[in-house]
Length: 419
Image (cartoon, rainbow, N blue to C red):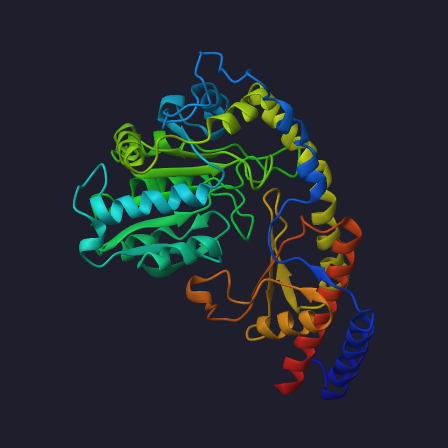
């Protein structure tokens, strides 16, 4: 253990480094996983693929008119193999998968599901939330009246034993999961863990895996894991309707003008389509036609995503290099090294994540609030910080990472000095 005088010396060094960084008067933001302008530029041609009266799909659908709640079949055929679902069980909607999530959960609360027509909202309703996890999932579910129950994650995915214990309560209706490059840790669920979730006993007959493939296409490296066919795993386990799959092109083309997707077992897709038909007369098929013509086929999507990786992989590398150089020689923090997705997770000493975020804000580096990765914004260890390096320029990411390191070092030595 370091002596008190040594700790004081290192605290003084950390304080001086922090003050030097803060004196630069920077304004940097690594809070949310937004695509950078250069990524949005990749899809500029999307805006010119439909013009004049050239508005018909290959199968003859007039995209200007009502109808087609299921979305354009040709576009669904492009994304079906990428998402490992049959095209007939894939729906295409508007720009936000969050909307599909809201609709599916609301329909279940009001009308029950394809498996059990008893409305979830008639009694207590709870959802399992792997942590660290996706803040938008937690916020949405809380707004709909769900009680959120945290379960831990490890390198293979959610803790199935913990999930199974909680699912003995029939009020537990499902579980959130980001299976590929989880937000915020970057973990990809293993085949073994996915099978366990598909087979897991649950008291609720319609226990549901809310399977959000938000980052399924966002590989940073040429060698990458493949998407799992969760629908087949669930069907083999005797739960063909257990998984509701969500995805979108929000970080693939234009975030404000993408296409969202919903998939499930055959009965679930029928249930979703029937409910959608009561609240909408069809999605924006012109925008879906734009995407169809822009990508042409599945290979076109994969080629496009390699261009994304060329832009953002260096930013991830810059953060990881800064963390390694600035913190690697001390036992002050740990961090993930994801192979895809949009985030890096930094784990500090217990009790100082909020202090790091405060120091960073005062030094001109805006971070996601501490606790955002947990239900109700409460991280019991106050140690998790989500880093989103995609939106700023590479130079800005490098500076922000340097500032983050300075903040972690200062907050860590403050804690060590306080005993």
